[in-house]
Image 1 (spheres, rainbow, N blue to C red):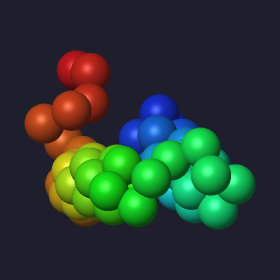
Image 2: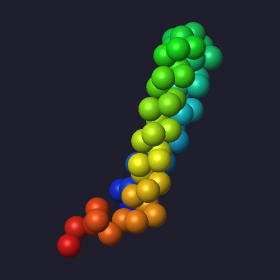
Image 3: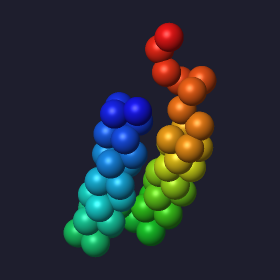
Length: 59
């Protein structure tokens, strides 16, 4: 559970840096939109794993 929580936290940090990179001109609108969409999909997967962690835990 700890690693899943860490991964979710890192995923939120990625959003901050993607928005910063876009704001500062390192990413175009299209790149930013695409990468943020991928980040959201990863967030959904992590959220699902956090809600039902049993299949992902070591036995």
